[in-house]
Image 1 (cartoon, rainbow, N blue to C red):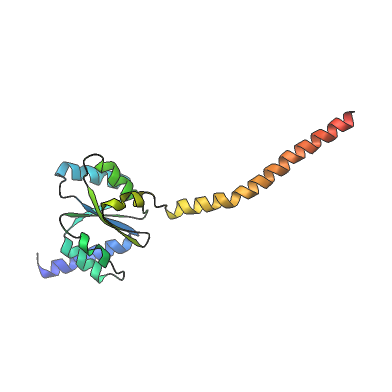
Image 2 (cartoon, helix red, strand yellow):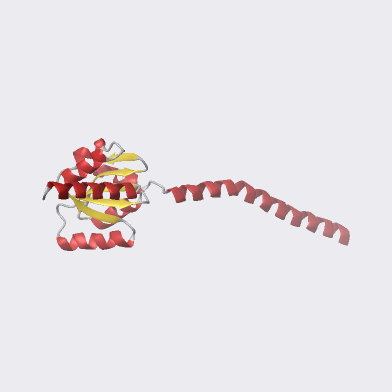
Length: 171
């Protein structure tokens, strides 16, 4: 590959990384073409972009970025696929689903919610990360809960008072 081509590829990888909020580095060394295509299809359905990249070019793209991705440099060995998305836990669930019992693909590292996760043992932690929308929904539910309790108590109390007054009035 010519030097100009490499510079263009590094710039493209850098642009793609900036476009997405979260990414995962996955070891796909043991995956054959059919398994890789099946994984690509699953990624596409869940709005995850999958790129197989050269480690040296990816490291150069990391170095050119505004964010310090140096904790992920040790992960850049073997065949690396880059899974990019805007919801932090979707690729982790996808990796766990695809891997199943085969232990393929294996998580090398991830950048999710502005934190670094290195090693396959971090997969469960990544699965349990809540997205921004999930956190907002939980906060709204927590804020609505006391209001709903007050309204419910007032409504049930009104029915009780009305029933008592009607009974007293009938007597």
